[in-house]
Image (cartoon, rainbow over all chains, first blue to last red; front, side, top):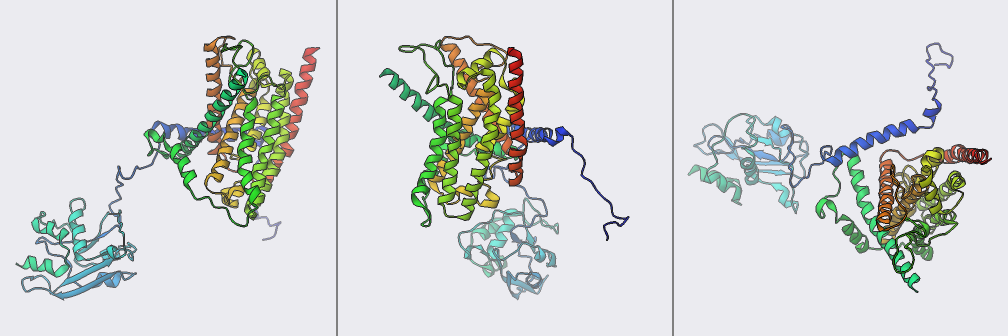
Length: 205
Length: 344
């Protein structure tokens, strides 16, 4: 475009009056704005600070935090070891070992013998949750995840099931099936340091 | 002998109070910073965070004092001391209460709320030692052997030299009116007539702007400029050496606030009422008025900090040389002219 093109729109900066050139009205305006914030926050209702350990942040319902493995009505893990979540996972943080389901489990052929998620590798994208055909894996609103070692942050099946027990009251399963009220056994799940198969054996008895 | 003891007591009170005040000013600064950003600010140490300054001070002392081996050591160590000392010695002539023959009596003779009462060149002295403060910054920048620190030091020298001129010119108006350089006489003149801000509004604005520049505070904190100069002159300083620069800066804020209040806001003269001359009650009321005004001024300085962004360097120079120096000269000339016409 040439400089004498008629389509060219010429802009001139607005002429400032003498008062505006001194910038004093603008400075006063700025002082009023900051002053309003200072007074409001000092009087106690303007500050947006959340005093964390005392006041807990409530994330929005679709927040993607720590994973949990859902249980069905009989307290069994819902996972059918189809590997769709592990395949969908962009960072390959899910490791599943499937096994043939016991004879009494009529609704499925396989179940997961071990289900391990590396919570440090996970990017919390929620693809596993979307991929799951039986709504077995879900992301909860737990965000205060911490540990002292990398090993501690690799969550096995027991831990993931215990996350379900911790969060099932606050966040019901998205599929809408209500799990049984927590029994002695489910409380045992939280504390039992053993891995998956033991739990299934308990349920078989 | 009694006089010397009284003097020592006065000096220790002033030094102690100002050092303590600086500690709490840092808390006030942090609180105001928080409020203006809709935060709460420090509130974990003690009720309302009131013990925070003590913890901050302990932290400063316990930190590792790193002296890089490429610095010019004697000057590197001297700089923070200079910064504090030059900020402190200005207090010698600052009256923090009424001074005069009818002050409240104690032992023999009236008590004077000033370390060196009756100094005729009070204002000149303050300007003289006030300009020395730049040495702390320049020497710190020079001895650090670091280009960012050096740039900070250079900026500071140019800035302070430029702003000394309009600052000195702007107070000439009030000096002409009170026909004295003694800070007490200036307060007494304002008490009898009108506050400096009403008779010298232009002088007040110029002095206020220059005062901000002299204290190296926003919007004139170019020697520090965290963003461009990674802290500027104090980049290489750590532990209490850094703390001393901090202390010096806040002492400077206190001195400058005292000056603004004394020269333009009536000193110990409260608005609307007139206080008597003698007695303890009047003296205490006057000291209280002065301290309240100074505190308000300090809060204003911090308020400004969170309102205005930093100046660009060329704009800073333009403001001093092209705008404020002509205005200050004009102010002086007009004041002198009017005075001459009235006195005829």
